[in-house]
Every structure is written in C-alpha cells, then in structure tokens.
Image (cartoon, rainbow, N blue to C red; front, side, top):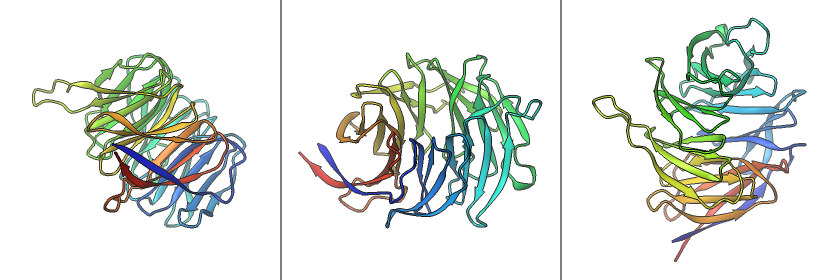
Length: 323
C-alpha cells in the first residue's frame, strides 16, 4: 500500500527565518515558532495569521501546548520560557532560566507543557529534567529535579499524553524515561548512534518514537510489566531518510508516524507494517511536523502541517491509498 498527500496551501505570511516548531491543536488552530524569534497563531482554513506574539531578539527553539489547546509554552535560544493563555490572550508567565542563581540552575533549551497545563518540564546543559510550575501565580517555580545520571546536553524533553511519564534525549543519543509521580528514572535506551532531535508519543502513551541524526526513527515500548521490569524497549527501526531526521509525530489514530528530515522530505510510516508508505518532497530541511489531532474522515489518512528551512508553514492532506 502507498499513500498520496497533496499540498493544500501555504501560510500567507512566511516567517523571516526557519520554522523550528509547529503544533496543530484540538482547537483546530496551528502555532509556529521560528528562528526569527516570532510565534504565530494560524487559521488552518484560510492560512492567515490570527494572532502573534511580539518577536523576541533571539530564536524560539522549543514550543509545546496543553492537551486542550488552551495554552502555548515556548522557550527562546537563551532560555526565556513564556506561557500564552489563549483564553485571556495574555502572556500568563515568564521564567528567565538563564539568570544566575535562578531556580532550575541552568538555561532551559527544550521545554514541554504537561497535558493538564499545570507544570512544565525543562532540560539543558546538565542532562537533567527540572519540573516547574506553569501556574501564573508561581510560573517557573521549581517543583522537582529528575537526574539522568549523565552530564550530556539535553536536546529534547516531552511529556506523554497521559502525563505519567516524561522523556528526555541527549546529544549523544541516549533516551531517558522518567516516572512523573515517583520522580525517578525508570528506563534508559541506547538505541541511537547520534543525537536524538525529537520525540513523538503514541496517543495511548505506550510507544515513544525518537528521531535522530543517525537518519533513523526508532519505536520504543515504554510499558512496564507487573514486576516493574522495563518493557521490550526498542521494537522497530524505521529507515529510509538519507540525512538527519529532525522531527516526528504520531497520527491521532495511532496508525502512522510522520517524519521530517534534513534530506528535504517528509515520510509517512505505517506502524502495522513498519514501512514507509509515502514520501513528500519539500523545498528545504523540514524541522517540524504535526498531524491534525481530529480523527481523519472515512477513507482518509488525515491532514498535517509542516514548517522548515524556508520559513513557510504548509498544510497537507491525504489523497487516499493506492496499490
């Protein structure tokens, strides 16, 4: 089986630099964060910008939303973390992680908002995760530190959809899974040979897909047996990109993985057969992808949005299957 995806439209107001993060929320809004320091909210039907934040002087390297699509968290190159409350339209909190002596102890590089919107996870140079309040009255206050036991730079962190786990990747390819409630490390994976740039959780929080500079995506089973021993770990390797894999996302029905690469393509992978079923050509490096979170209509494989090197946000939809 192969799938075809059609280019639907481009955003009407391109970013001035690369798009490093995109998110399509349950409220059917799209958000993009760019190396030009800007954060934009898009109407996916018209491709028009509906709201935006004043641009920062440095690029936005990380962005995350809550499970309801009511809050957007973002982090700049030097470690300024901010929260946009979409109900009020206001910036509800700012945390200057780079200030010497501030809680957290180091500049944040990657941040992830808990699905409930109550806390956020941050990682950076120490190779640990710190958990902070995302409440407006105490935004940035440190709640816990989750040590990985290594001092390799933390490149990416992401909460599971059910909020029970948080994952972190290092510059050398290790992946660490932490139990949020117990505040402890429960699994370490060494599946990759190079840095892991991005994570994608399955909707049921049982599988974690990692995207790496070693040109591969690896699917990990993070479930634990009743005895408490780790699950099977790496269960599938998805190979086909010819350069760094920069991003990934799992479809809302859990059937497909979408990936973007420095080889200027996106691939759609069927998780049941663990094969690539579609390759979509783009104009440059693809830094971020996001499926539309609403279930696909009958006969469709869904829709997604992408952003990359040229600063243009693009919408794509399934044209159906063949073969």
